[in-house]
Length: 167
Length: 119
Length: 89
Image (cartoon, rainbow over all chains, first blue to last red; front, side):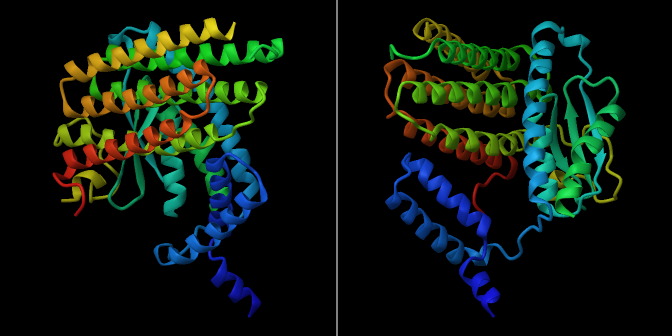
């Protein structure tokens, strides 16, 4: 019974924490009044919007998510320098823009969204479209002479980790 | 502004230079690259990282000069969450324009790509 | 030192803004123009932050935040209009 009550009052604990943090950042202050008002918002907003969140993603290993984010941030910085070099010093005709097809093993929509976002944020690749049945991702690469290498890189580096987090 | 330690001074200056350079490279790439899909690569990312490090510099600067402020983090988080989405939308606009083009690889399933199959 | 670097940074981001504006004017397709506008919004956020540092005030962050939100929403609205001929169905 208490568990069900908690679920009713606190349908999305992560969303509530996020709301409190965002509120404190927005006010730019960490006094008691701010935190209390943020907590009130964090309680009320998830309850009133619970109808729009029918099921939440199951994150089995939250700490993996943090290390995944650190990995992505590092990749963004490294790859940004590479793309900057390509943009600055490579002639337009020397680049090999290519479409890359990535068959997906992930099934949950949240995981696919995260994967697509990661691919877009790491420079050199942009996720363009999802196939209608949600089983393949179309990615455009700025300078990839070998599309298979890009595909394998994305699959082993990001998708495997996301699979561990979400499934 | 005068009593900022020298090391933090250097850190903020480096971040500012990195940020401004990446922002400039992003816009330069937008002008230089010659195909619509290639153009998508330079600004959506270089600018995001560029503005990200400008925000970081501003945050460190505010801390060093005594008025702690973290709300740059909000702008940064917002930019990093929304950049892929707007990039994806612009990519879809490009796809839509070259509809029926031959260069797209076919998806494994029969139904085709999502952008084309919706009405 | 920071002041000197700030001059450089404001100059560089301003130049970036001009380059994006050139793409906005010549950009052959609608997609390029949307992309140029998106880039200009992001550059404008950077410029606002730099000006805030330059004048030593905190009051510009709200405007930067609002720019970020409006820029995202308008990019999506424009792209959606081109894609569907309609924004809200």
